Amino acid sequence: MTAIPQVTFEHIPESAWQSPRRQFLKRFMGGIAATAFLPSIELLEAENTRNLLIEAARALAPGEQGDERFWAVVKDQFALGEDLILMNAANLCPSPYPVMETVFGLTRDVDGDPSFTNRAKFGDLRTRSRSALAEYLGADPEEIVIPRNTSEGNNVVISGLTLKPGDEVVIWDQNHPTNNIAWDVGAQRHGYTVKRIPTPPNPRSSDDLSRPFVDALSRNTKVLGFSHVSNISGVSLPAKALCTVARERGITTLVDGAQVFGAESLDLHDMGCDFYTGSAHKWPMGPKEAGVLYVRKARIPDVWPLIVGVGWRESPDSAAPRFEALGQRDDATLAARGKTVEFHTTIGPQRIEARIRALAAELKHQLQERIPGARFHTPLQPELSSGIVVFTHPGVDLNRALTTLYEKHNIGCAVMRGDFAGIRLSPHVYNTMDQVERAVSAVESLI
Image 1 (cartoon, one colour):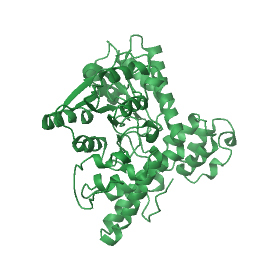
Image 2 (spheres, rainbow, N blue to C red):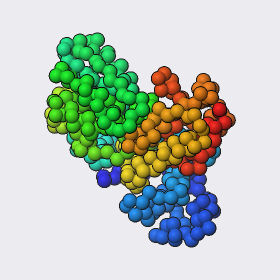
Image 3 (cartoon, rainbow, N blue to C red):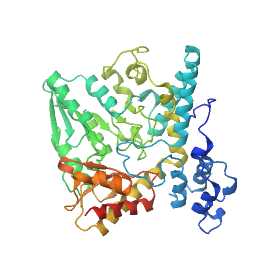
Image 4 (cartoon, rainbow, N blue to C red):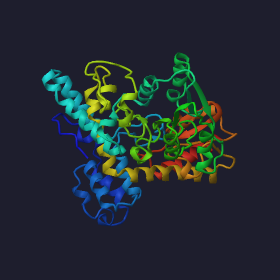
């Protein structure tokens, strides 16, 4: 993976992110020899938490997830308050210190010298970030655009495709508004038809989820647009299977990956989608306002640009010049995208996915065991879900749950409304199994 070059700047004070060594010993040794946990290092010689994370990850075998001591090292990479239980990754995640530090340092660099000459380096840094994202996503650098977020990426595609009266767009009724209502606005303007497809409330297999879409496709269908994982229910659609069917029928696919990008290992070439979108402020853990838009190389000429600004040029072979000329951007943020990829790669994308799934599985298990009558909108089967858990209970007052959980129990989460009304918990790598237990206890107290 291409690394972001070092830039000289004033670092965040060591005291802001470096845990005392006694705390390291207490937390990680746990009565056993340090070498039994991290045989390649001595904890007393670890210079800082980042070095410890690198060495801890290297000490794990390729398929090994790591125990709670390893994930405690990961948790120490974040500025989260010690007592805060943040389970809202589906909405907004904190950035780890390496990403924060890169953004802060490059921002100081720009503000200290905004000259054209000094800022010239950011063109190369943005290119390196784009290449890092491509490698992380199983794509080519020429297929990667860095928009502000998923919403902008979706709208680039929706506004840029050429559709006409008689054409049909098939979408999931659980899509985020930017891959849902945005199509309605386009239909009002261009006269095409939008068809919303529901999926079964209690799916038992991937076929249960894919069949409604396949059955809805017609000879007039030009686009199939769906969320990879629903932000309102936590249901995970079989993206590769749907994209395969669509491509066989000459149908364009737009996959909203806001709840998968950063949470699961992805290979977009293998998935076979035409467009894939994601946000950095959710599961990738920063920086903010630097998402991703994947445009399959063969489809670059088929989409009109949403914005034409300085630096725009007609380019059938590269998506960035065509779709990334969005005016003045935050150079530091764009350059730091590569640092985020580096952080994920240090831990291991497969290991991150396994951890998120393990936390979600434990949440489901404890909620089932300890709260009889809990009803899940999210499938209990891991193959039909990901890191989001949405559930409800007749005894929970949803109007007060969000405030009570935060003010009394220091838990940051979300409360959903409408057809999928319930509490949404979406844990990430900065959460511990102990926090899962505490979160379930807090929900228990609401009943």
